[in-house]
Image 1 (tube, rainbow, N blue to C red):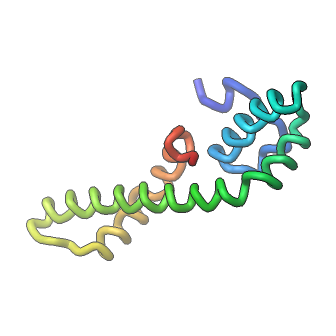
Image 2 (image 1 turned 180 degrees about the vertical axis):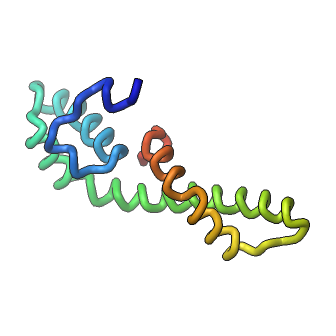
Image 3 (image 1 turned 135 degrees about the vertical axis):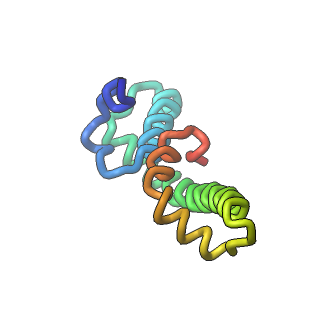
Length: 116
């Protein structure tokens, strides 16, 4: 069963990446506690954008970059082992981007660790 079929997301969240959607829904939970009522999606998005989105996105970029660099370093190790020499970081990065970046990004966005 696909993850998206488990829960239909409100259309207001369609412009957000998966990890942002999760962050907004978590914010909705805590906003409900703060307000002592269930906030609408529009209220939640407005609150999240106004209070948390900028800092969350800054932290996310840092987290994503660190995770990608780790993946590239691992890829460099395996490429170098296969080649019997150090292939260099730039060559490993280019190869990783071509071979793995798209699939990795889709996988990464589904991981709880991708959210700050």
